[in-house]
Length: 116
Image (cartoon, rainbow, N blue to C red; front, top):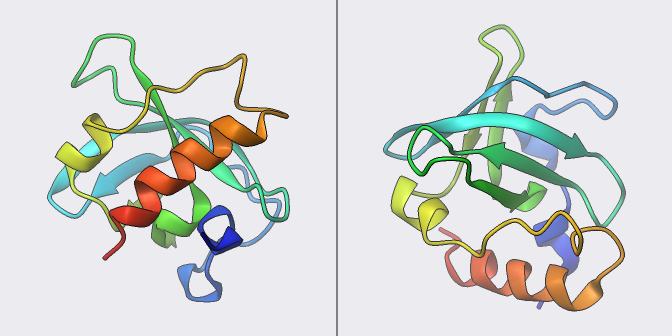
């Protein structure tokens, strides 16, 4: 599996260091939630998205490679996934997402297999 799933593509318009917290997240078929936290770390960039609107209190970890574009003016992040793909993704584990390579591999494999 390629590590590029954990990095922003150059075409997204994301500027490293930009705080994306609070940005709305748009799936290919509509709004899915908002960014709760994010990281720009090289080879480990991600968004933690609160999809509590759809499933009470649920958060998901989206690798930065799933981001298609960032609209700074509208404060929206567009991802190359459907709402169902995001809802069916592995649950965000706040205790494993930092420093657990196996967890990142599991999450990365799920999204890598669902890339457009």
